[in-house]
Image 1 (cartoon, rainbow, N blue to C red):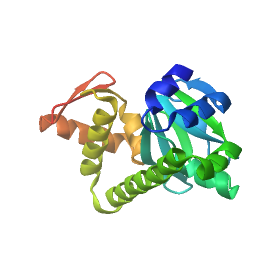
Image 2 (cartoon, one colour):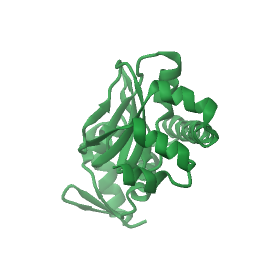
Image 3 (tube, rainbow, N blue to C red):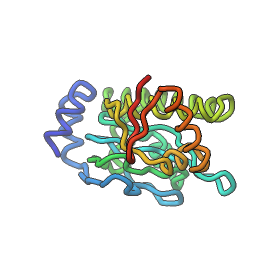
Length: 209
């Protein structure tokens, strides 16, 4: 995975920072559906995504789970960085959306490189900005969009994420990510199919938009 790290993050980090990361990182692989980080856990690392995709969820005891954003190759989860710098436990759940390889950076190096590596510092600041924008979109969608619009946005987001018009996803998974019921999601998907916006297959959805 060291070579994959260099391939993905060359152009993001300078060569010295990449070598430093390769020396201290713990490399791990996860299967689709694996919980990488759960709510209430102590955080001792910053993850860098090498390949695949993960989704970051927030949970409410009354309303259930809410999808905040996805992370793909070349991304990091800055919410874990926030917890690291303030010694807080995790308020999010990070789940493998596909098979995924990650490089975990220990907290102490994260803080040290903020002051010693310009490319690391820029990467973290840009990541904060990007994640904030994505969370604003998620909140706006929840507050101002009806469920059909949210389903369409969700499907298009996954299509771009996977670079594939055929999505392997169940109605129950969509319902969980959008904090809705399976019955409601199935009804909306049937309507979208009748509107010729999607084609429903067995555990797959073909995007026609």
